[in-house]
Length: 276
Image (tube, rainbow, N blue to C red; front, side, top):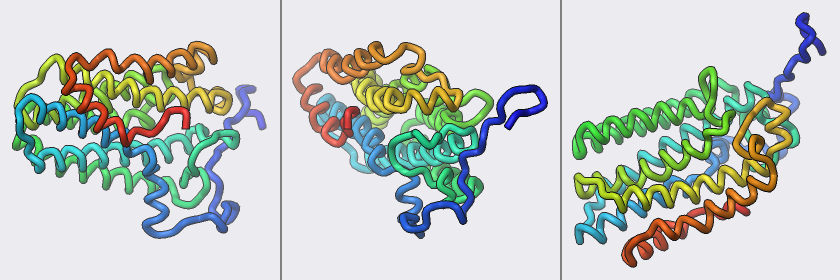
């Protein structure tokens, strides 16, 4: 079908409810559990654990309350980001039929875009409530990090130029799922920020970026059809492979002390393999 301008019309990939596969459709909490993509949530868990382990190594003590709150806040932000990504990709045509990976509830018609957006807002509201407690503990640096994280979570798949549709996705992951998460957790425990905590954050972020890069490499063709210009599309197949391997193997150089390496080993355990 052509528009009056002569350009082909981008078809909507939101499948109406009656046409969606009802045999595999979950309901209730299972639907939302699937929508937040639970297998990816370890990307939030790992840097928080690394920041806590590093703080314990440096200070000799660890307060479990801000650690648990930071973990809950990070999980809520990632869940909200995943939900916005689910609905954003469906409405923009990003969930092409050739796309691999877990089912997307909006594109399959299992939930309306409005419901998914409301669920994302609930997750962000939960993160904001947790952030009030963390801000009381850590002051304005925590407020700034929290607001930036919420804005970035929304902008990843929303707005006029979503981050997920640009080559900047990996930098976003390194900044917020690496340096921000590790550094923020470390700061809440010690009220300070060290060079090592930033390096550890960069290392954790590199591993998380490898997961995103591997996914984008896998979905290069459907992403190109949807108009996305991810880093994998920009640099090509071979460079994407080398970059993924570099993100997986080089972060070990960021650990300047034996304690740091041990902290990383504890935190990296939950990380999903980017090749899985």
